[in-house]
Image (cartoon, rainbow, N blue to C red; front, side, top):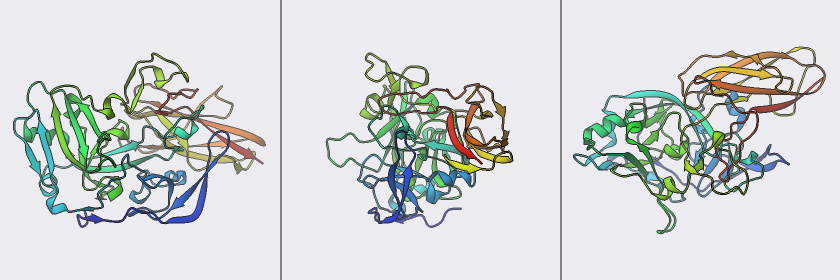
Length: 392
């Protein structure tokens, strides 16, 4: 299944001359397209150091699995290993365990394998649409992707070390490092019961091939249903903790208002903040871009993708009257509760400017909200999407 287990590449991009206009509220922002990153095709360049690469949205109208070479990239620190020697790689497991262990990639790959199809989505996906605007990477809707991840259960790895009674969390750390010594190393933690639930895996393959360097080679955490900040890349260290993790990336960064839809008002004070966690339902039209022209009075195929967030997709509904009435779309194949799910419907639109709204209801009955949320970090946007069309 895997090719040669090695990777080495320069991360300095060569920019293409093409550009794409991002459909942000209040006017688009032009972004360059680049093909200059290793193992990546044409991507929207958000930032080169550290790499932030967005998937062009047209990619999501293809296969249900996002191709590895078009899968988005998000790194926090610019010091990323570009030459990883598989024969010397080790995953260290230590902390509140019976015995510290160090596993080679070959030893990990010899363990019982599991697979899961799951969406990886940046916490700040769609941040560019927040109003008022907030700081951070100005993503449109392409900071997400769906893949078939192959690896081993985190539970099985932890069992080899033996988790001591009193353990409360497992902390993930990767090989990327801060650019200055005083900056906080990126580390993320999961509650011990979550880490040992059998769903969290350590993946060495993605869509049947080895992980691309920029998507975490040689090993990454896969936390189905949770935002990508927990999916630590180039993973080489697991620490079992006997007390709650108070590191910067858990206590201060990646926190959201403890309110419905992670919503608050700009300038609002005294709001309790908690670490971001489970994803929420979303749905999109993929075959018609905003502003597309369609034939009036004739059946128009409208299709797209939906995700339930931390569970499956129960229903996708479409409205052409501003949300007053909704009609059910036909759902495509179910690839698992953490995967994208395709949907489609035929619409007949009268001549003129028209809008099509799409919403997802997940298997827990959670429905996308009609109004967008706001928080200072620009996290967890999942408002019902509206596509403007011109029928003639």
